[in-house]
Length: 215
Ligand code: 1PX
Image 1 (tube, rainbow, N blue to C red):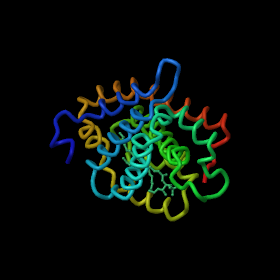
Image 2: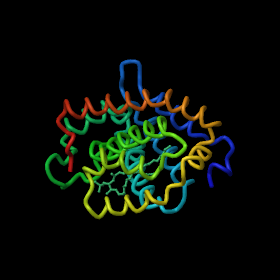
Image 3: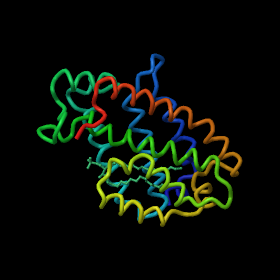
Image 4: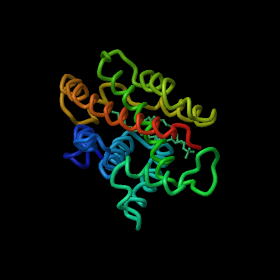
């Protein structure tokens, strides 16, 4: 697995990336947001191939955003705020039904944004879990409270099946490569407020622009 091959890989680093996402005036840097997601996907891949259909979709979306960043209009994609303004001002977003802009930055990031809420709920459960807690249950509860509401039945079914393949809590903590369970809990306690803040800033921005339901 990735975690074993690369001794430097720890979940701490990944969560730290989210720390660098926010500028002083609370803008979200797309480059760091995307880097955070790449780290999460890497972590997920180290958990086994059952999750590869989830990872594949995440990677597709990350790649779309990277393409925007590296494209000729990349300067407009430096922050999520500038991206939203640029795409809305220039009518580059399908607002009510899928049409000419299936790869808009706004709709693509919205998918990851919703998944970030799942992550927040899941990590909070992990943080407050006990040795007997089941990761699959924590994961599906977090999913049912968040992302699942945006997914078709067939996706919910597939996700639910994948959750049962999650390793137990002890293995999970090991793969994070952060240290003892106590250290993991501390790390999660430090990281969660930052993830929550990135989530909330994005959520508020999308709400203000009325784009929380992009097709
Ligand atoms: C210590 C914990 C760290 C765990 C890190 C795991 C990172 C998980 C990354 C999940 C990213 C999922 C992105 C999903 C985006 C999405 O909602 N896509 C759907 C809609 O897209 P569309 O373009 O059609 O509008 C798409 O249909 C999704 C398909 C794939 C199935 C998504 C299931 C999501 C389950 C999330 C939980 C992941 C559990 C991993 C366990 C570690």
